[in-house]
Length: 328
Image 1 (tube, one colour):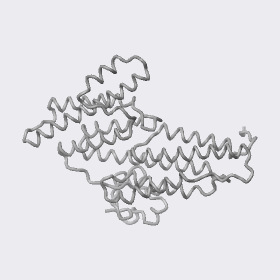
Image 2: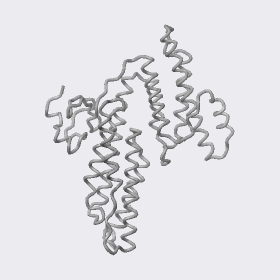
Image 3: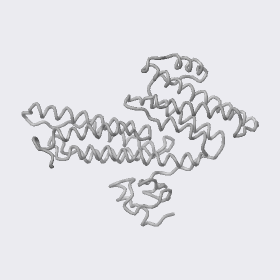
Image 4: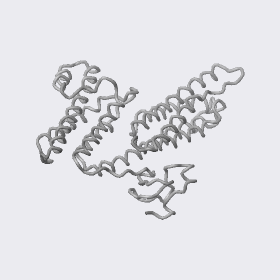
């Protein structure tokens, strides 16, 4: 156990719940943080969960959970049963129109994942019946090949919001298959830290964008609350009993931000109205993006960059002095 000097106080966590100060401990440091066992990863204290035992049954359960999570966050229509793999592959190979071929590739990826899950399920059932399944078993190899091919096709799949793919989600079932469970859990803390960093970047950028805005003068406390509850949700497994307080806190923080309306002057100009409309779009897009990231528990770099660019254009258009020119 770490000393109190390495262990943030409850007051510190209330201001910045998961970020460590300068002179942070090494990655992998364990400590009690605000009554929770946490692991330090890339600047964040993240709630620690003991990995399950290294068995085929545990791996099967993990891959099934990751696959369900994957299909929950990607575009509709690609959760193709594994027994239709040959049909999905034939449709992908004969399609020539690029946009349609992308969708067929996404459907093929779904069929490959489901075929791999079927094989793994049967292997676990054999093991439960006393049949020894070796790591180099031919069916284990076939399962791995299906997952690897699905991972390669995963770049064609879009997030359900339509902005981008989430390659990280496609890689996770293959990692869970090919790595020890403990190693997979360790890699997840890195992903969670990156996710938390994106949440901080998004909320800090929006707060800085509207700094000094007369239409949205009281935004920062709401954004701070969104960031804190979003990061807490990101680190919490759905099976953890605390989810019944963590998830409502995040939903309420999101809803409060969604309800914010810019305050127009009594006689608004067309520019005032345009500013309010654009501000509304940024707030809705930012809140939705944080929600997508929190639910997927992986970064969404393209969408994050796009939002930051929108914030930059908004500030230059509406909040920087008009007619100013860059210094030489």
